[in-house]
Every structure is written in C-alpha cells, then in structure tokens.
Length: 47
Image 1 (tube, one colour):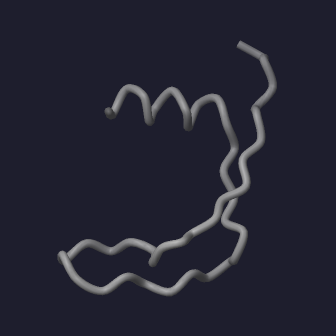
Image 2 (cartoon, helix red, strand yellow):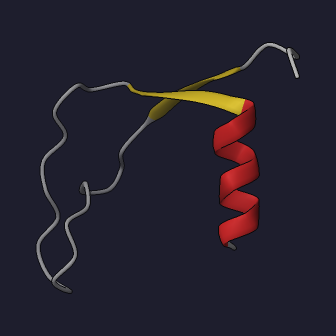
Image 3 (cartoon, one colour):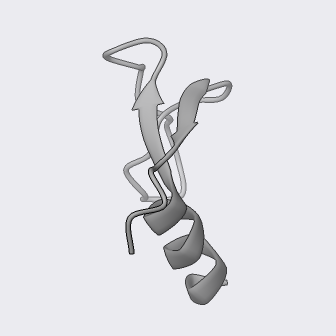
C-alpha cells in the first residue's frame, strides 16, 4: 500500500477542495472527516 501511495503522490498534485475540513472524532488518528473532496492534476512528464 505504501508503494502505491508513493507512486500516486509522485504522479499527481493533490489539493483540498475545502481549505479547512473539520476533524474526524475517534480512533485516535488525526484525519479529516468524510467526505473530504480532493482535486488532482497530473504532474508533468519531466523525469
């Protein structure tokens, strides 16, 4: 899962649609509440 996430983050630029999403409660993890929409854009092919 880490490898797939790293490949996606390398290939795309991610941006939050709403600049300050509310925090989710529970499970002890800091994460945005669902739904948390993202915009994504393919990065250039400069490698």
